[in-house]
Length: 377
Image 1 (cartoon, rainbow, N blue to C red):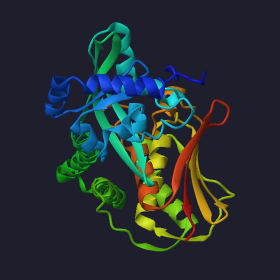
Image 2: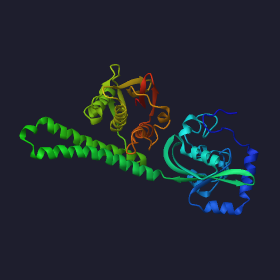
Image 3: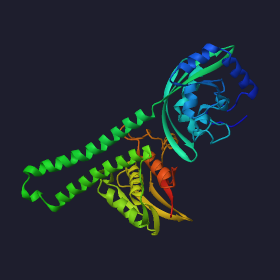
Image 4: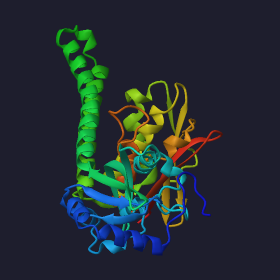
C-alpha cells in the first residue's frame, strides 16, 4: 500500500481500466452527449483515475489520443506541480488537503451528490509555470455496477485574474490617492507655516508610491501575458537592498516596525533586471512587514551561493501549515480578498523572468524567511 497524507493512493489495474474504458465507449449516446458539451469533462473511476475524456478535455490538455489519459488522475493529466510530490500521485500529498478539485471528488463520492468547488492549481510543463483557477463539479453516477464520477472543469483563470488585479489595483491606488488628496486639500487653505519642505516631501513621496503601484501592476499584467521586456545590467546587491528599504522605510505598513539590513550581507555585482528584482524584493518586504507586530524587526540579507545570489527577508512570525501549502497561489491571501498577488508575483517574476527560484522556511522557533535565488550573471 502506497503512503498518502490525504486521499487513498490505490489504483485500478490496467486490465480493469481498459475494461471500463471499453464499456463506456460502447455506449454511443454517452460519447455523443459528453462530447457535445462545451465544458471540459472527464469520467473518473472509484480510484479517481480517468476512464473517459471528452474532446474539450483533449483540446484543453493539448492531447490527440485520449488513451494517453487512461489511468491518470486529474492533477497528473494537467501536470499539477503537487501531483508528483509523493509516489501516491494526485490527491495524496500534504498540499492536496487544500485542493478544491480533490475535495469536490471525495465529497461527491461520499455523499453521492453533485459537489462544486473552486481550486487554484499551479502546473509545470517544459519548465514553464502556469497558474490556473478552475471551477470543479463532480457528479456521481453508477453504470454496470461500477461507481464513477463525472468531472466538469470550467477554466475561470481569466475571470479570476482580471477581478483580482482590479481589486488589488484599486485597493492600493485608492489608498495612496486618497491620502494624497487629503494632504493637498489641507494645503489649499492652510497657513503658510504648514507649507514646509517636509510637507512637500510627503507629497512627493506619496506621488512616487502612487506611480510605483501603477508600474508594479503594469509589470505584473505584462508578465502574465508574456509581454514583459527585460533589461539586464550590472548592479550592486547592497544598493538594491538599500533602495528597497528606502522605498518602504516611511510607508504606512512600516509604521512602528524596524527594517534592517543584516550586517553580514555581501556586496557584489550581479547581472539582472534591476527594476524587476526591486519589485520582487519590495513585495517580499511588504509581506514580511504586513505579517509583523509593532516593534518587531524585519531583516533583509543577501548571501553568495556559488554562481547564485540569495536575497532573503525574515520576520519573527510563523506561518500555519495550511497557509504554507497555498502561499504562492495567485488568488490565495491570508489578509483579505483585496489582496493575494504578493507571493504569487514573487514566484512568477523570479522563476519566469529572472531565471531564479523562490521559496521560504517557516518554523515557530525562527519565524519565516522568504528567499529568491538568482544567477550572478
